[in-house]
Image 1 (tube, rainbow, N blue to C red):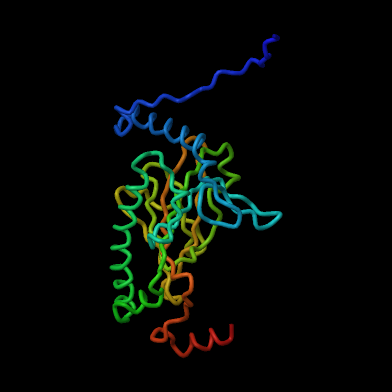
Image 2 (cartoon, rainbow, N blue to C red; image 1 turned 120 degrees about the vertical axis):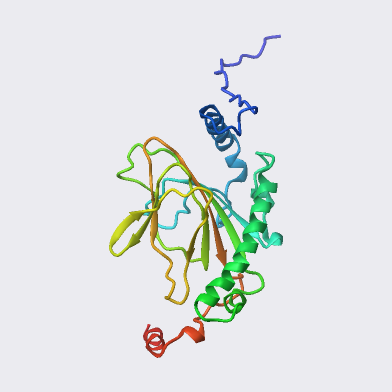
Length: 257
């Protein structure tokens, strides 16, 4: 009986990660984290790929136009609150602590969000629960993990195109060591400072607090990672201008538009 013939195949390169120094702040520890990221993004990402027509899951830009300019980023987008709206099939099981850590982070964020709604309302001279009630009982939180790989032509490509967030407000846990986030103000772009152990908050309200236009630039040598949580109204909630903040002049503008 003739033996089956098999083509010679190349040996697979399986990354070995030293768990003993994985969480170390040393250069060796950072190298192990880089290897972990590379392994997970190469072997795991398709398992959690975004489905057609859905924002949740792993992927790049959704292609909406033939001539669309794409962002230089990979992202994992997850609905994190309310809990019954989570699609856990998109929540990676590796690292093992990911789901537990994201749940804890989300619940702590939710406490902050509730306080911040009240603080914004007070700053506008409104009752504490005025803005929170407008968003409905099923106000949602969606978290997006952004990874910007090193870009060979950083002067030609943006990590994220200029835009303003459409959420009520956004909680951003920025990269600690690599610059990239920029804001547009008074006709000029300004780079955001590197923030350690701080959360950056973007808000908007009735045109008084405007959502700032921002973008992310790329880096030729270093990757950059950030985590953004968008706080939105419930899916069946209609948002309208706050009567108490509508001056006669603003009312005329709205009616004209």
